[in-house]
Length: 331
Image (cartoon, rainbow, N blue to C red; front, top):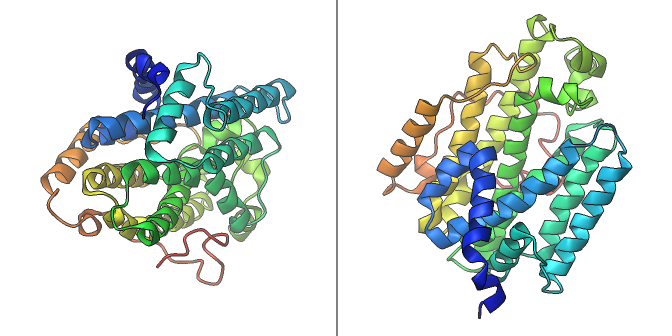
């Protein structure tokens, strides 16, 4: 039974979360139109919770910012109070989060995993290997995929849900890697370089160049390096694709639109000649609209057949693991 106190706050609280999605998540906001209203409301609550935590970290002026670390710790305690103790307080996002968690059984542990994941950006950002970076991607993005899977639903039972959750976590890694290759310049402005040292060395690049050289995109080393990262991301998208067919039918089109829409950012990066240092690559609005129309039109086809990502996966890392244990392990 829904808590009456939660129900009374629904209109304003739901509107506050929807506004956060509308302002910060264009792909997801468009894709969410395919969801039935209750699932859309829950997905918005989860996105808003994640976004507020992420925005806190982006406020940090330097690594180890104690004031932001304190705010994030308070946020994590509020999460415990909301989900574990049933006391969301007066915060609209947490009241909506309480309703979503209760309605769809989202585990508390994955919410705390998200907060711990974004907190890693408060420390100096450096990853030696792809496996290390993949673990970071799991914390900040695979968690979101797992949350959404509970909301979307998996009708075939617990075993199928476990498989769907693993596919969703793989998709999260693909999407976070897409963010990383899209935001190279913006991240450098915050003193962050997420690319693993192993990858940089393999292409003759350095962290210092990523952080300081605004002309690096014109260097002959840059395009092959970015093509490698984009190929890795596309492979992860393909590995995650079968999971969408496991979701409830009323959520498959939304999940497809999110995955294909985000993968489209990779095409936009290629169209810019791989320059994500001087500006962010964006998918034009008309392309987003065309994507939604195509997915709506193909609604009767199996979800895994309806998926299509631009370009061919670029192979070149066969001798190294694609991801950390637990990531992208489903064929």
